[in-house]
Image (cartoon, rainbow, N blue to C red; front, top):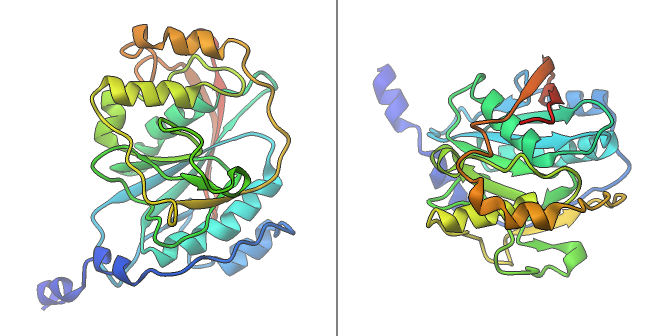
Length: 277
């Protein structure tokens, strides 16, 4: 009887055909944590949810590199949890916060998020997500495909146009198999810029290609924020990247997890980065 019941549950992929329309974007004011916890009381601790009315075979970890953007974080949660539930995604959100006041290293935080997430669940799909980007279209599925996928193709502040062909930043989806092959992101980029270009180069070096949904679907709204100071050494690091792909990434990252907490809206990791990896 139990087996028959299980078989009768449809695959969640069958739900995707019914996804239509745009999601309303609410950028302000930022809600409070208590308001969000009340609104999303259906979440499991750690920012986790999975559908119970359909079968899902892919486990998705959403990795957010973070520091000092609390208001954006709350606006993001207000948006993304409803979005993912609509898509019937098995997901957990990880916020990886860099401790200290030194230069921000977004790529290292994403590498750490990947490694630490696997201590929580057997994820096979990883979505690396900037906190200031809100997806607009439900058809932009937060899953992995056969190739690494650039998700934030068309952003409002860029007039919904792809700036250049090999762009692979903002929001990206990479399978566990491919992330291991690519050795993750480079750890060498401190400050703004360069790590996404390096990852794009890694993808092509390993004979993979960047996949994308059409511009009409892969649309995002960006939250306004002060621009980070550019990394003055980013071009040098990109130029030397080909020499480091096999030894600069998830296989040599050096860090300490100083705190971990499963909050209702997300799993929080506070990490200390070491400069010598």
